[in-house]
Image (cartoon, rainbow, N blue to C red; front, side, top):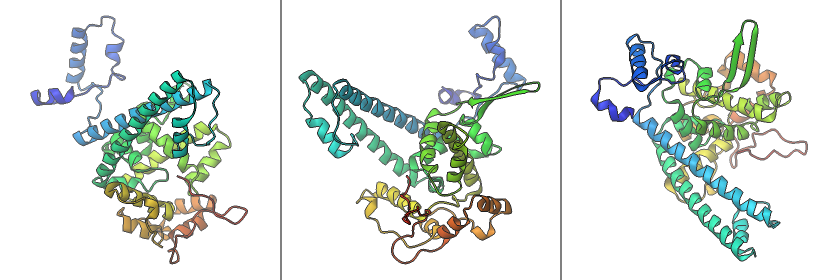
Length: 368
């Protein structure tokens, strides 16, 4: 509506209905009275307004919202298929029902005629939705190629190009935020606070802002919580005294504050795993050029700084020149050896394991 009216007026101001108490609490409430109250508030410069995104940001928001709708529909279809099998007491022989073998079994399993008809219909719809998601992801990968801030955000653990585009679309111009806490509050990841006198109550998160971006960040937090860098110890320390879901939301909020500082200072994440960063950037290039699988791409035998230099993100701060507070944090969380390992150029051949070994002496598996 704002874009339709913009060519006909000098200026467009979009008010925030959550903060316009003069209209919500009025005794006489009609369109004419509301318009007059808005005009008076605007004349006195008391009308709470909201930031209006540019065309590029609106386009990204539209794509991310559409992708969220597709993934929700895909999950609904999968739940219907599993519900049908559960109703018929049919147990799948495969642990992953949506793998190639699992889908082949679904297409060939013997069911009553009317249930077979329903299952085939659900599988056809699921195939269409999966193809639509793949087409949209290919388009988003092409968009990510022209966004210089996407490779920067992809250095955060658990953040791929879809999450990076969703975060850029939700935040828009980061210069309008005072700090990372305000950016997290804008996305609804800040706790609700009610204070009166000496009493102060902190509740659940406000859930203001983009629900699609919060969902993407929560999925990223699931992977980042297993990262051997500072985010992993932060999650494990918090989950000892909080519910796991609360700790995951706290990690999502931490990712927003980290992303804000990275965008503000134009610096990649300092504690990423070189092997994982190589795979991320290789996979993005494979999606853009569409040749063979990213798993077949050879790995460069370099450390984190060399990986960033080859992939395109700005230079990263060397561990030797980190601030004293950050050095103290690494010492307290026993991450000094991990940092030295990821910045050390690897030997020729494969990249060295950057995750601490288990009791058996073998390195742990790579998180997503």
